[in-house]
Length: 323
Image (cartoon, rainbow, N blue to C red; front, side):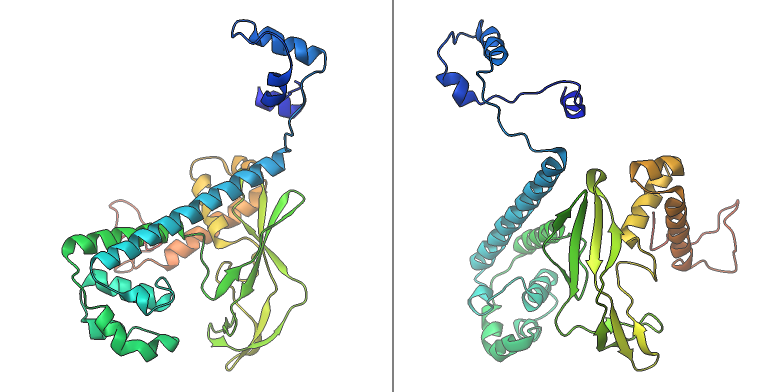
C-alpha cells in the first residue's frame, strides 16, 4: 500500500487524530471507519505532513546514528562505574578516559601484564606530568571477573564507534545534495600525508582547491561520496608527489570498502544485476572483483612454488584478506 501511494497510484492521507477527535460525530469502534471515510469525502480531515522519500531515508539514518551515540554514552558510564567499583581512580586525573592514553591503560588493565607504574608510563602529552599520581590511581582491586567485564565493554565501545574510522582524518558535517550524501573529510591538524610513490610520510606542500569525490557504499540506493581536497606531499625521496589516501587505491574513485562490498555481492549474483542494484555499471563491478582478487593473492603466503590451486589443494594458510 505504501509503495503504491509513493508511486502515485493511490492517494494516501495521514489524518490528524487530534483533529478527528474534535469533530463531533459517532466515536464507537463499529462506526469509526465509516465515520472517518465520511469525513474524508467531505474534506474535514486535516492532512498531516508526509516528508518525501529522500527525507524519510535520511531521517532513518540520523535517528539510528543518534541511537548508536546514546548507546555508546551509556556503555562509557558503565565502564566508569566498573572502574570506581575496583578502586581505580583514572577519571580523577585523566580528563578523557577514552582518549589515546586512557584506552591504552584500559587495555593494559585487561591483559594484566604490567604493573601500575608501567601502565602509567603509557600516558601521552600533558598527562605525563601526572605519572606518579596515575600509578597510584591505577593500583586497584581488579579481579578476573572485572577484567572480563572490562573487555566486553571495550569490545562494545569498539563496535559502537566503528563508523569506518580513518587514521589521521576526521569526518565533517554530512550534507544532502540532491539525491546524494556528501561527507566532507579533512586531515587532522599537523598530520603528515603518505607519498603515493614510496609510501613515506612527509609534510604538506600544498592543498588542491577543488575537492575530489570518492564513492562510498550507498545505503538504500543513495549515492554517498567522501569529499576530500587532495594534498601534495614534500617527500624527501620522491620530492613533491600527490598523497596516497588510505580509503582508496591510486587514482580509483571507488573506496576500497565499496569495492569489497561489490565483490561480495558479485559472488552471489550476476555482475550486471549487482550493477543495477548499486546504481553502477558492469565495468565498475568487474574492476572491483579484479582488485579484491589481486589484493588477496598479493597478501597470502603460499609455501613452495604453487602458481595455481588445483586438486589436491595446496596446504596454504587462510589469506589475511577474504571477500
